[in-house]
Amino acid sequence: MNHSSDPHSTVPLDEAGDWLDRILAGDAADHRADYIGDEGFTSRVMRMLPAPDALPAWRRPFVVGLWLVAATLVATMLPTVFLEAARQAVTLVAARPFSLSSLGLGVVALGAAMWTCAVMALRRD
Amino acid sequence: MAAAIRPHEIADAQLIARVLVEDDRHAFAELVKRHQSSVRACLRKLTAGNHALADDLSQETFVLAWRNLKSFRQEARFSTWLYRIATNCWLAHVRKRQEELLGDRDADIGDDDRDDADPARDSGDHAAMTTMKLDLERALARLPEAERAAIVQCYHNDLSHEEAAYVLGCPVGTVKTHILRGKQKLKTALAAWAPSVSTRTS
Image (cartoon, rainbow over all chains, first blue to last red; front, side, top):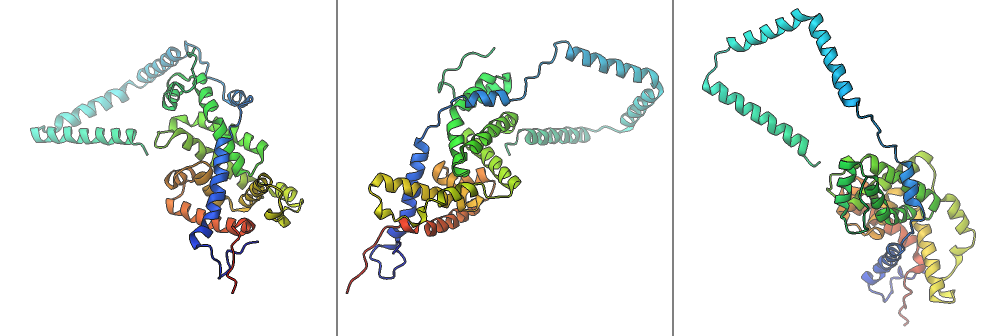
């Protein structure tokens, strides 16, 4: 029977409030002290893990070779597109008057972009 | 082939690095061995003593840990990270079933008239302690999931409020509120275990 709500209680308020903390702390101490034996648990977990990737050693060079073949085919079939794109790019860059300040600005912009990428990649959260 | 690992000689962080870099399954097995007891105990508490369910969820927890180890950025202890996964597994299970996990167990325990048991009438301290633990377990099981999880993380797993907030994925203030509300409900449920007090006699 709980008498703690009795207005004439002689138990101090904080003591009356602490009894639950004591119960919880005691239960928590028992909880932490009780070690649960493995009894095959780890083995069961390891069996549930996905199978390791067993890719053949020739896979990487084979994929790289395929990409090379595909790129060569595209370049052979569409030579004018590549040539035109390259010519336009050169014209665009060559037509721009370069100055030391614009070069410096470019370097700063490139540095800022790299820093941003690095921060994004390394951020912890 | 990975070298044999002597227990407790290698820090968790090194074992994690081995898993990530070398895909070392022996290292992960060592991590599981180290933390299985605390994770299973935590889930047993959250599922209020349903050992079979707790073990299933524990296995799920470690498999998820394996799959997501790359995302572990060591902003918390590995054990705390595991508690987080375990708690999420349990909450997902609760949501999926949409029913009280220990309803049946509650009924089983409730049928033996323990509600009417007066602690003072128990023959010894041990019996009283056992009865009290059962009452506490039942009272915990009746708490809403969020309040139960907050109390288990802070008391039973001995986490700080900040760590519990990380595990539960909510602000620290919310954790404190859950604990406060949960304890109020526990006080009501365990009123019979409040210290008996002498009243003034005039």
